[in-house]
Image (cartoon, rainbow, N blue to C red):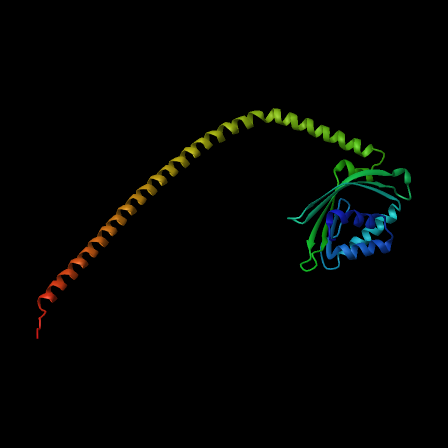
Length: 245
C-alpha cells in the first residue's frame, strides 16, 4: 500500500467480497510471507509461508458466507508505530442457514512494515477485535447470546459495586497508611536534598577559595619574575664599558 488510510478499504473488500483469485492476489500483494492472523476463533502464528493459512481462512470465510456486506466507519493510521486501525460493521449470512444472519461490529488492527526502498507498506499481522457481546452472535444468533452476555455483564457490574462498598474500609485504611508513609518519605527526601544542597554549597565555596589562592600565587610569581628581570638588567648595565675614539 502506498497510502494505508486510503488503500485499506479496497484491500478489505478484496479479501472479504472478492473471488478466490482476487483474494489470493490481495494476500500476495499486501501481506508479508510471514504475516500472522488472529481471530477469536482461529489463529495462524507467524512463520515463513504463514500467509497461505490466512488465504485459506478468507476463502473458507467466503464459502461460509458468499454474500458479505461491509460498512467501514473509520480508519486511523499511526505512522510512528506503523499500526492501522479500521472500525467496521459486517453482515455475516451463512449460506446453509440464512436465518442466522448477524450484523457484527469489530475493530481490525493491522501492523505494517514499510519497505526501505519503495516506501510501500505491507501487512505483517492482522488482529480482529470483537467484544464478547459481538462474537457470541456467531454462536447464539437472534440477539439471544448478546442478551445473555449483557445480563452477565450487568451482574458483574453489581458485583463490582458491592465489592467497592465492602472493600471501602480496606482502601480507606490503606490510603491512611500509605499517605503517612508517603509524607515520611517526602520528609526524608527533602532532608537528603537539603543535606546534598548544603554539601554542594560548601564544596563550591572551597573551590572558589582554592581558585583565589591559585590566582594570588600566579600574580606573585609574575611579580617575582618582573623583579628578577629588572635586577638582572641593572647588573649588566653596570658592567658595560664605554669606548670613545
